[in-house]
Length: 145
Image (tube, rainbow, N blue to C red; front, side):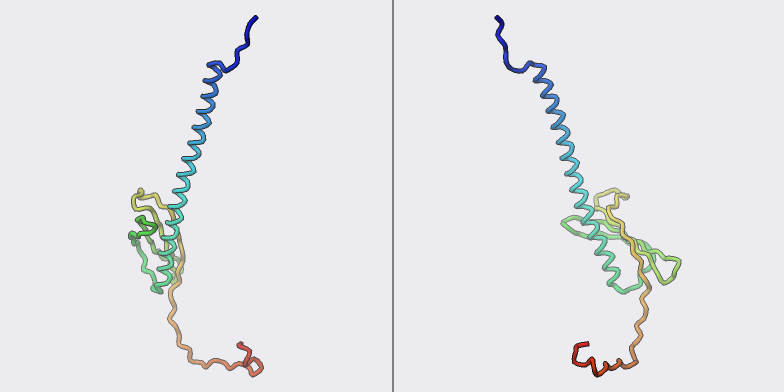
């Protein structure tokens, strides 16, 4: 009589190890992809904030932007960011297009993370108001209108 042996053969163990290695390799690849993607999204978000800040500064300056190119560096989120602003004329002489591009200071020249464009109208001189304000009708007085 022959006794039955229990357990796995060497080939079964090796096949299980191959399947396990392939599965773990796929999991590690996916984790690395998600990690790189998270860093990229963080950089893109901060670059967007830098571009928005520069555009708001231009808007709040109330000065008519001169055509041309300017650039600089700014520190945000403990990193240095390189920005470039291009002001161009448009077919309408009273409107200018402002384009702001932002990248990490250490990135290659064409590695812009964010490009933001806006149009600015020429500021109009304020005309002093000489006409008196119209009086409110008597029925509406006292109602805060």
